[in-house]
Length: 199
Image (tube, one colour):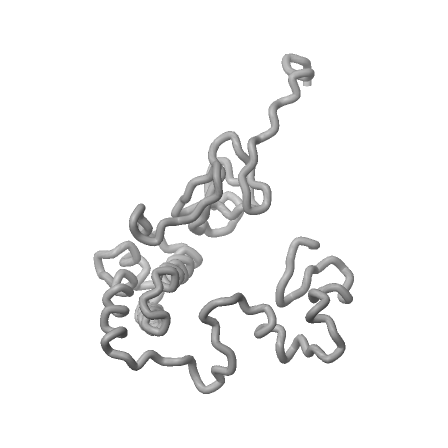
């Protein structure tokens, strides 16, 4: 409570400030336009009621399919997931989006990340698919990437599933550092005045 924002407001008990000022005018209809108003900058398209844009340029679609093959590769990092979640839909969407973005590597990485997340949510083990030269994870200072990290809001000292949620790829704070928002800050030093005293 009080730590959300976006389509559902900020959940602080006051419905009057659920939307930023520029979106809170009486003329603004949150039901009709909230999704459009909150969409991030990038390749998102509006008014796709008749279907998403399709890439028709074969000279771009063919190499896009080749790049997205990692999702369908029967010996690839997601092979264990194929029986649980059919990769065909994800691979087709990946190739189409990659074609429309003219080979944008960020688009490719997002498409693969989407399938990886779906597999992990289905409790299927995936193998490492990122590398120092492919879809390099961007982690803040004093943190590192883990393919199967415990959700940040849980404490999982012994088991990544101790909190009852599936793991997901994420940046994890290094030893001696604690998460603070999207950063990792040094853990506070123990109070020296209390060291050695009786609890």
